[in-house]
Image (cartoon, rainbow, N blue to C red):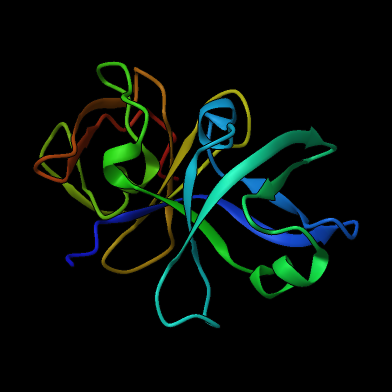
Length: 174
């Protein structure tokens, strides 16, 4: 069987109580879709040689976590082994996004160039501090470049060709 590409949607950080509930830190904007009853998730963990398929039985928000119970897992001893694992979905199961919006994994590794043709480097991370996202670009040498994801700065994103065109506003690189 050819393993499909798996995309991170959460980190299973701990157990909750004794009835098999687990604490998940969500890494998706679509909690209601991703963690609803019947959803299929893949657990990737160094303890297991290959991903383990799990099915959501129940889901509820709790503080900064999503609490899940999993089909066939009825006690803390059934789920303790999953602590520290990543919850993933197959790329084909991702929610379709509106035009000109992208998943972060699609952006990572894109070449970043200015509208004047200068190569800045490769996008290595996307920060989400609040008002707008920030692209972290790793140049060939020197310190990382931080670019605000706003229309005046990010002019074109082409995930097929792994290229992002940006406009460097005055003072941005100083």
